[in-house]
Length: 248
Ligand SMILES: NC(=O)c1ccc[n+]([C@@H]2O[C@H](COP(=O)([O-])OP(=O)(O)OC[C@H]3O[C@@H](n4cnc5c(N)ncnc54)[C@H](OP(=O)(O)O)[C@@H]3O)[C@@H](O)[C@H]2O)c1
Image (tube, rainbow, N blue to C red; front, side, top):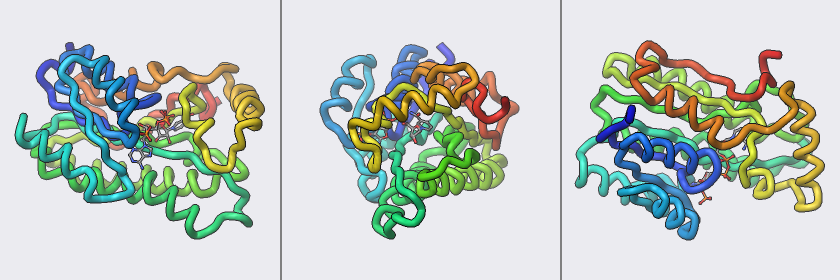
C-alpha cells in the first residue's frame, strides 16, 4: 500500500502500460484519476479500479485536460503523483516525412506531454513525483523512426530540465523508457500496415537480448517504484526497462 490516500493522475491511463500502472496504483491504495481518448477503454479501466475516475482528453489539445484537473482540485486539492504516459508511434523514412506527420507526433509525444505537466503543476506544491514515459527509441538508431525518436529525445530533455527546476519543491522527476512491450501500440502505429505487424514484432523480439517483449506490468512496476518513497533519493534519471536492449 505504498500509495495509500495518494492522489495519482495517469495521462494515457486507459491502455497498455498506462492501464497497468493505473491498476497498480489503485491496488496500492491511490485515488486514481486517468485520461485517454477512447471512452470504451476509459470506462473499462475505471471499472477495474475501485474509486477511479476517468476523463476524455486529447493531450494534443492543451486545454482538454482542464476537466480532470478541475475534478482533482475539487475532490483533493492536490496531485501527489503524475504519470505522463500518453504517446503514439509513427514510422516513415526520413525522405517521406511530412510536416503534418511530424507535428502530429510531436503534438502528442513532446508538446502535449510538456503542457500537460505545466497545467498540472499548480496542483503539485510538493512533495511529489512525476514520471514520464520515454522510449529506448530516443537513443536507438532505428531507420524510419525519426519523428518518434526526436520527440522522445526531446521529452527526455524536458524530464531532466524539470527535475532541476522542481527539486527545490521536493518533486522528483524521472523517466521510464520501455523497450519493445506487448501493447496495442504497434498495431495502431501509422506507417505500419496490418500485415506488417507480425513481421515487425519478430524483428523487435530478435533485437531484445532477452528474446522477448516486455509486458505492460513489467514497465508499470518500475513506474510505481519511481513514484514511491522507495525512490526518495532518485531524480532526473531515465530508467531503461528493455530486456537489455540499450546496455547489452
Ligand atoms: N509498447 C512499446 O513497445 C513502447 C516502447 C517504448 C515506449 N512506449 C511508450 O509507452 C507509452 C504507452 O504506450 P503503450 O505501448 O502502452 O501503447 P497504447 O496501449 O497504445 O497506449 C497509449 C496510451 O496513450 C494514450 N494516447 C495516445 N494519444 C493520445 C492523445 N492524443 N491524447 C491522450 N491520450 C493519448 C492512449 O489513449 P487512447 O487509447 O484513448 O488513444 C493510451 O492510453 C507511450 O508513450 C509509448 O510511446 C511504448
